[in-house]
Amino acid sequence: MNASRARLLGPVVFAVFVQLMGSFGAAAKQPTARPLDAVAVALLLVGPLALLARRRYPIPTLVTTVAALLAYLGLGYAYGPIVVSFVFALVNAVIKGRRRATWVVTGITYLAMVAISWLRGHGFNWWAVSGLAAWLLVLLTIGELVRSRWERQARERRERTEAAERLATEERLRIARDLHDVLAHHVSLINVQAGTALHLLDEQPGLAREALTAIKASSKEVLVELRTMLGVLRRVDEQAPRAPTAGLAGLDELADRLRATGLPVTVRRVGEARALPTAVDTAAFRIVQEALTNVHRHAGDATATVLVDSSGPAVVVQVDDDGRGPGPDSGVNGGGGNGIPGMRERAAALGGRLQAGERPGGGFRVRAELPLPPAQETR
Image (cartoon, rainbow, N blue to C red):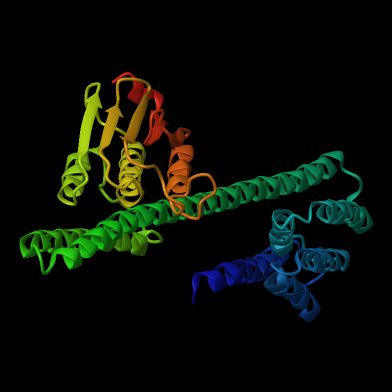
């Protein structure tokens, strides 16, 4: 028996056992009451069996248990645990949110039980009447408390699910941006080096060999990074993903790789090196990587200077070149590429900003300011 069926049948079995056994025991101690017969047994079973429909039909279930209860007492049978199924049905109806109808049915039940007690010759006892009212109010209050708790738990589960889905979506978007940057950078290098190798293959085979070696290194690195990112994507719905480790610590290696392709790159750092939040570290590196890729692709015969300033409340990365400026595919000023817009999205996602445009005297500049959390500013 699965858990759901056990939760459904448990109250039914309990009510049948208690009402039958308890009522026969109560009848033995109330000789003036009507002896239990087949009609009494049928009424004792109606309420528990009605509980089988309590999930889909809470108010009809409650009305059925009330009818069985009032008929049993009205026919003069012994007072006893006939109320068990009514208690389950009453609390269930409140939990299911049928509050107004439940209060109406409870009020009618109260008045009917008081009337039946008077008709059976018990008179009008204020203590008994007040006790019955208090007992019914306690049951209604228990139902309200349980309903409130279940609603709060359901809301918390829904919020946790939405938060997990939101984090997973943000992670996929971040990985997509990383994937774009990695592919754009390495494929651009491979394309340029392949053209160089083809041009020099016959006249200067030594230089062509160097270009092919650079192609091999770049293709190996892009495969490693792609394998890492795809592994993260496979885990993004299973657990909190671990981000690829690209960061400003790999800036010198990036510069060396570009120098090997013929692009002179100078790296300059301002301020003491400090631990950065992973999101800021990765975004800063990817922005520099994309900016240098644009220099390599669009600036022609140029040199590039990278500035990393971590001395203030924000990490500043700036890439300058002295080339001829971006081409039509760089994503600047409405171009068709995704480079500059992608960098802007990275900076904006962290509450920062990115400026990209021509430098006075020629060349191009990309400057990003990525704010640090307050705990990071004082380090």
